[in-house]
Image (cartoon, rainbow, N blue to C red; front, side, top):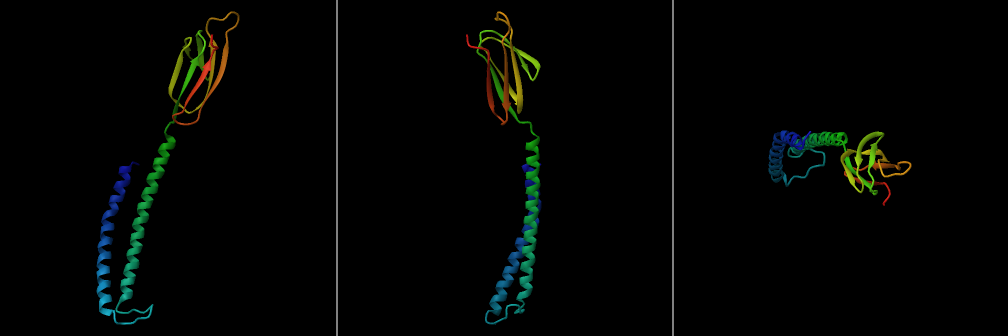
Length: 173
């Protein structure tokens, strides 16, 4: 559902609304006339005095119709809001993370156990529009070591849409 849908639904209620407004104006005019004609007569509360109970019933009926239109409008709004909320929940939320290599040596990067790319010495790589979640980063030194490659394990946790997170690997030379 779009806002245009909601507006269209509300517009479909407009003729009913206009009809009620016209009816209300007519009843008020009749009540005013009736009041002026019977203003010198004293009536008991529940007594039909100069036909006022008929008009009272008409006013109650109008209020009932007004309430029905308002309720329908609120129902449309609730339906629209539920649709928007559902679309928002289904939308994939994304964020950004960076890997900064502090070393002058290159590293091989693995994300969640899968080889991803190589990062050169003193470089920063950026991953944009990634889904929210937890990412395990493993960085294996590619060259520049004497006995064994340096292996770094890092975790990136992206929990908020639009979040930016940075992890560093290697050692500054």
